[in-house]
Length: 342
Length: 193
Image (cartoon, rainbow over all chains, first blue to last red):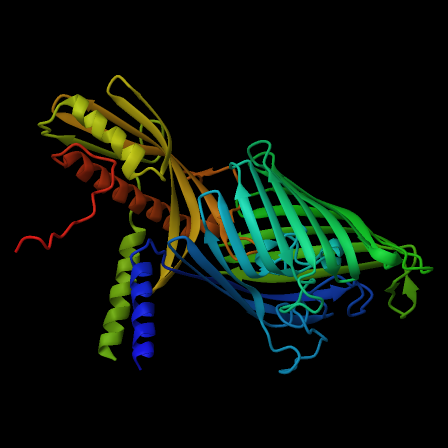
């Protein structure tokens, strides 16, 4: 009893001490998204990148809820998502069927952070990946459909990382991670990763990323460059280039995507995504090459963004289907998405 | 039920009032928050020192650079604008501005102007970060689609300016010279009764 009282007193004292530190209000935000997509060959899932899979259907993306709180130097972020985009299409144990036993988690981000100094911080938990240009949340992307680079790379990394900010222009992150996209490691804490951020001039930020260890295709190393440059008030250019090699001829991929965007009116921005992507040979099985062009508009009204989009993909190896169900080298689709962020 | 309706109406009314706050324009056609304070009994030098301390210490995180010359203080500031719903809130963006303080015997004036807004967006880790590095002047017409949201941003920027102005005037009205050092911890002696 004495021990219990002592423990309660200790907890109460700690809480009181923490309460006296600077505390931000609880931050609550999120988004919802829905879409209509029409595949020109009337083939659902013809273009096999992530999300927006349905054809000729008004379908759901996800509802995303984010909580954040900072007390003194400690903070946490918890992000839950519900819906196809936020569950079976992006989370672990996904088999495109909902199951309470194999796919009942909804967590996109769940981590704690501690700022030891203004320059040095450490973060542990389950985090959106530091690799790549595009993200799962539609709020974080300009295009509604996703690139092959995004689909092939990691979505999330669970682990522990340390970040040192040398200045506003340079920072370095290093961490130890589980294998890709899992809440708990299946092969132990088996990957090391790092990120160098440089901002050479105002408006230009570049991230050089490396992640080596257990991943989606076995053990391998991914090198990634993600950069954006706000060249003028109206024109922004983004670039993502990545190379992934796995051990023992287990495959991998390489590709580059360019993202020019121009604001044509105060509420309207047009953007193009041009992508070249190739998968690598797996043993005797040859890899294949894709090119894809996506023209997207973002029309904003308050928290709502309408995203009309046309996408054309090409591959000489004919991985797509035409209207008659025969293999084809080209595929195209139109989609209209509505994303509301709050 | 009546209480609920009344609370709702009060909240709604507050919201409307909050949205009515808007800056006047200066002679360049830019939004300005301007105040002049007369009846000062302390010297101009002392007021200028206090104003410098305000920028350097009290609002250290807000003001990034400053220049002081000939009884004029100029500084560049930045504040985060939040959107609150009940107990929760989230940042919607940041405003940067130019702050200027001028002093003469017995009076001083100050103003904030050249407001630029940078919207925030959520990043991959669930944190809000600046979506661009180039700010939009608050005087810019946002178009019909975003006029409501823009009015709320202007109103929020005005409230921030009011808060800074209130803190600034209070700081300058203090009798003692501002001291940067932390107050010494309170010591209780048990030797004497």
